Structures are given as C-alpha cells and as structure tokens.
Image 1 (cartoon, rainbow over the protein chains, first blue to last red):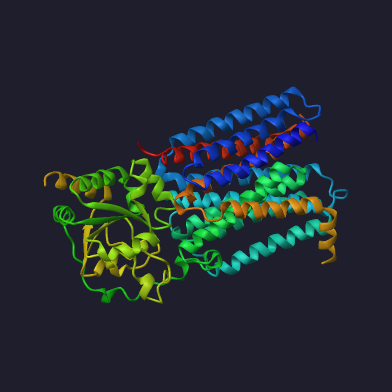
Image 2 (image 1 turned 45 degrees about the horizontal axis):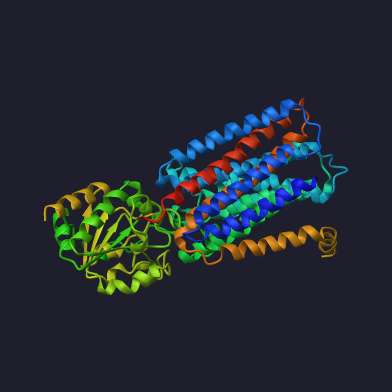
Length: 462
Length: 102
C-alpha cells in the first residue's frame, strides 16, 4: 500500500476519534461531526485514486455512479425526514451499512480459494456475512416496528429456544465450513439466510420500549462488521473506525439500559412485553377524574411553577411547537416553567431534546431527571403530555410490575397533575398506570396538539 | 488456548490495534450527557459506513467481466455511501437545532 494512502488513512482515523470526542459536548458537537465527515471523504477518495492496480475506466465510472446515486439518495432522505422519525432513520441507515458488509463478504468468499486461504481469513469472511446479515434484517425490523409498519409483538412459542437454536445452527455451520474447508455456495447462502432469520427473530419479540437499546446494539454490530472487513483487507481505517463504533456503541447501549434499569441480558433474552400477562390488578385502582382545557388553563395560570413532562405522544402529534408557545405564554404571566426530561423520553435518549430544540425551547429549561425529581415537592402543577411509563409509580411500589425499579419522574409528589392522553390505553410497556387514578390527577383527554392549542387559546383569554 | 496464543503471536500488531481502539472508543464515549445520545448514536452510525472503503476495494479488484461480483460490489458501494452521507447529514441537521439561541 502506498505511503500516502497510509497517511491519509491515519489522518482519517484521527478525525474519527476527535469527531466522536467532540460529539460528546454540546458546544463542539457540530464541528465534531463535520471533522469526522471530512476524514471519511478523504479516506474514500484516497481508496479510489491511490493504488497501483490496473483498473479499467469502466470500473471507475461504475464507482462514480454508485457513489453519486447513494449520496443523492442519502442526502434527500436526511434533509426530508421529520425530526420525530429520527430513530427509525438511524436504524434504516444502519441496516444499509450492515448489508454492505454482508455483500463484501459474499464477493470475497467467491474470490478466495478455500483450499489455499488461511482459516483466519475464511472465518473473517463468514463472520462479516453473518453479522452484516443480522444487522441488516434486524435494523429493518426495528425500523418497521418504530414507524408502525411491523405492528404487534409477534410471539413465537418458546422463541428463546428457537432463537438460540438458530444461532447455534449458524455457528455450527460456520465452523463446519472453516474447519472442513468446504467450498459449497449452498452452505454460504444457508449462512446468509441464517443471519437474516436471526436478525428478524432477535428484534421481532422485543417491545417498543426497548427499541432504542436494540438500535444502539445493532449500530455497534455494524461497527464490528466493518472492523472485520477491515481485518480482511488489512485496512486500518476500517479496522479502527469499526472498532471505535463497536465499543462506543456498546457503552452507549449499556448507558441506555441503565437509564431504563434493564440489563442488556433481559432486553435480549427476556423480552419486556412477552413476560407480561394481562395484569390482574387493574380493577381495584379506583376511578379517574377528567378535566377540561379551561379548568387546566386556570390551574396553570395561577400556579407559581409548572413542570411539563413531554413524552412520545407529544412527538407523534407534532405538538412540540405548540408546547413552546404554551410555555412562553405562561412565562410571560410570571409562571416558572420547566421541562422534565426522562432519559428515555421519546424513542431514543436525547430524542426529546432534539425535538424541543427544533421548536426553539431554551436549553436551560430542559431539566434532567435527577435534578428535577427533588423539585416536584414544590411544584404546583405538572402537565404530562403523551408520556406514560416514565411517570408510572408502579416502578417504585409494585415489585410485580415489569417496570419495577426503573427510574421514573416522581410527578405524584407535585400538588396537582394534569395528564394529557388520547385515551386510557396502556403505554408502550402495556401496563396500567395508577397515577391516573390518583386523587391529585386530572385527565385531559384528546390529541396532544389539539389539547395544547386549546390551552393556549384559553390562556390568551385570561 | 494454544491456538489463541499462536494467533495473537502471529497477528501481534492487529491485536494491539484492536485492543487500543476498544479502549479509545470506551474512553471517548464515557460520561456523555443524555441530551447528546441521539446525535452521538447517529454520528457513530455514519462512521460505521466506513465499510464503504471495503466495498470500493471489491470493485477495484473485480474483473469487469465478472458481472456478479461487480453487481454486488456496486450495491455495496451504494448502500455504504447511503449510510455515510445520510448519517452525517442527519446528524448535522440534528445538531443545527442545538445551536445557541440569541
């Protein structure tokens, strides 16, 4: 490999590390992203033009077309997508990366003579194919589940056993190919199919609440697939870049699990919703109290401080702009307004912050869970918009609840709680919320955007 | 166990690089505010598109008459660059919104 290309790769690798580091601080995040992107462009251009191969022009033309085509598509999707759709988009792009790794593996398997190639290389190729296939199909299922095209949690009986059999089958088959030096394309396709099936089975039973963790995990897997292909070509930028994403992804995954008080093991093997039978404790919860927009507006108008708890329902209803209007209106009337952000509000950690930032909510008004929880005792009114499981007291006091132990926002400590929901339907985790039956709680039913618009109108008239 | 030691011995350089890269990855991500988890995941996702380098290598090495390899390589490049461009663009869009007001 030419020295110049090696230096370009080295620089690109450094930009990845610096970029990731800078992405971790609000002030430098943007430049971090651009630096990493610059490094990536340099690595790509270097790979295309700096080598001593005799390459026919037609290949260059094809590479050019492929890059142009993919860039235009990627760019268009990225600038068109709504901010609420962000998690599924990340998942989709991630799936493409995985598919790319699997395809590379397939081509390289065809190119290598299994009798003369070292077992390490064959094992590398096979793992690239399998991991690439798993991330591809898994990411597509995650994408489908988040945007609603893959609806229910499909329960295959004994799915844990089925899943484990599939993975054992894949490993056995792969070992057979590697150790036995078998060069049959059928086995290769069987491995590919096995990877695809495993990806589907792996993500399908996982409940929506755990989806961010899964996306992060799949993201990390794509990094590992990239690193493996890097080993194949002895290519440092792929190796280091892939490993960086892999290890950073695992850390991020664990951080998310912690925020939800779930272990990675229970996310993968004990699916949230699969364990929950129809809860038998629903009846004895008492009655709910429903309220109107004008009553709620009066209550907030005369409060000293109001805490807004935004959830995914807010995002779905595209109500992030109206809520900002409401907040400004209350602020002008002398009410202290803050937002309480649960670590997993929305569909991914930080998702809610992005949405509220989009509608110009001041950064300083967003208060994280640990900081806001002690303040609920002195809060007059809490307005919960489209959130459910993150304010469910069962996490504290019902050991039989599937979310028991999850850190929640202690809104029940406030003097009054107004909960906006579309209906009494259970939240993403599929469990009842006793908060709604609390005597301090008033339910304000309706679509978040409509209800908030009504509230704004009422407040303007006061 | 013997095979593992032998493998490490034969691939000492790569083993070093892998382990150091893991450490760097962990250190760089540690203690990131939850606010930035989404952009960070998105940015890391764009980086995993580095697999496109491999896809380009596949195309450069393939015989212009080997349509299968060429077709697969072409698809791999398209998907890889989608991951890269889409990932960085969407991360940038997200971060634009964090820009300080006033």
